[in-house]
Amino acid sequence: MVLVKEAGHHLAALVFVLAAGCDGGEPVVGGPQGSDPGVVIPGALVGRTWPVLMADEAIRAPFEQHPGWAALVMQRDHPGALAAFSAEPALPAGQARVHAELAASYRQAALLAAQATVQVWAEERREEDPPEVDCLVGLSQIILAQDTAIASLTACTANVSGPIAEEATAWLAWKQAGAAEALAQPFAATPGHPPAPVVGGLPDVSALPVYILHDRVEAREIPAASPMTLVALAGYHESAAVLALGGEASIPALLLAPWRLPMELVPALPAGTLPIEQLFGSPLLVAEDAGFLADLSHGQGLAAVSEWKDRSALAAAIGPCVDLAARTVDPACAVERAGRAFEQVRAAMEIKSGGEQGYHRPFAEMARLGVVRAAEMAAAAAGDEKPMGLLRLSGIDLSLGAAAEPHYLLSIAAWDAHNKNSSRASETLHAQIGHIPGVEVARFPLDALHVRLSRESAPGVPMH
Image (cartoon, rainbow, N blue to C red; front, top):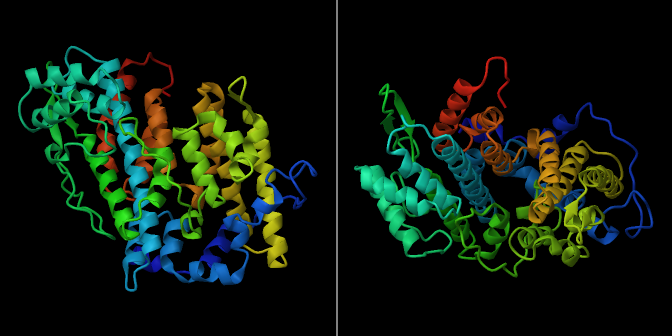
C-alpha cells in the first residue's frame, strides 16, 4: 500500500520534479518533412503524438488524477500500478497495460536466463559440471529455438532423475512433436507454473522452486531454476491482459510483438489500433508505431520502414537513416534525428500549451528514446550488428528515470549475457529484482556465468 500511496501524487507534480533544472535548446517547428531541416516527423503526425495530445489539459487530466499512471509511467512500479488500477473502480485499460508490460518483462528475463545458461553450461562447459545442466541447457535452447535442444534434453533424460528430468521429458516430447503454438506448451510439468490468470493478479513467486546441483569434483552447491518458470509467468500476464480487455487480443498482441521469444510462433499482425492509454509514457508516439515495430520485427523486416513512413512517426523519423538496398542503418543519423524529434515534439507541446510546462521535457525525452529504439530494431532486422550495438548503447543512456522500461532494459541484459558481458547484465537484472516479482530466477545462471568468467580471466584483465 505504501507504493500506491506514493504513486498517488499528481503526475504533473512528478514530471515537474523530473524536469526541474533542465534547460533545452530552442524549439524547432515546421511544415511537411523536408521543408525545414528541424522537422523529422511530418506535421500531421506530430499533432497526433501522445506527448502533444497530453498538452491539452482536458486529455491530460484523467492521467494526472489516477495514481496508477504515476506509478507506472513515472516510477515504473508495476505491482503498485496494478494495485492502483485494480482498486475500485477498476480501470481495465490500465490493468491491461501493466499485464502486457509484465508479459514483455518476463519474456526478456526468460531470454536472459536462457542466454546465460547456454553460455555457462554449453559454451563454457567443464567436465566437473553436474549432469543436470543438460536439462537446463535443453530448456534454454528451446526458448532460443535452437535445434540442439533435442540432443541436450535427450542427454538429460538419460542421465538425470527427479523433477528437473520430468520437466525436461515433457518439453522433449513437445519439441519432438514439432509443436509451435505461441505459448501452448507443457507448463503443467514446469515447477512453480502459475495458476489460471486473474485480472489484477500477481502470482505468488515467493516459493519458486530452486534446484540445488553439485559439481562432480568439489560437491560445491550450485543453485539453479527452470527458465520456463519465467515463460509461464509471461503467458499468465498476456492472458490476463486479454481478459482485462474483455477478450480483445489485438492490443496485447501489438504491444508484445517486438518482445516475443524465439520459441514462439508469432501470430498474424492484428488489424487493431492502440488507444492513448496504451501509448502514454511509452516510446510509441502514435498508434501506428506499434504496427510498424511489429511489422519490423516479425513481418516485412526492414522493408517496413518505407511501408509505414507515412503513417508511423517512428518510421518517418528513422527513414532517411536506413539504406534498404545495402541493408544498413546509420546510427549517427538516427541519434541526430532523435534529438531533432525531441525538439520538434517539445516545441509542439509548448505551442499547444501556450508556454513551457514542467512535463514537456520528460515527455519529449520519450520521443527521443522512441526514435533511437526504432532505429536499433531496424538494425536488428537488417542483421547489422555494429550499428545495432551502438544504438543499444544510446538506448541505455536514454533509459533513465521515467524512461527506464524494465522489458527494454532486460532485453539489453539478455544481449549482454549472449556477449558474455556478465557484469552489466547482472547490474541490469539486480535493478529489476524487487520491481518485477520473480525475475531473480534469471540470476542463477547469470551468477554462474559471472563466476566462471571471473575465475578464468587472466590476472589484470578486466571483466566485461
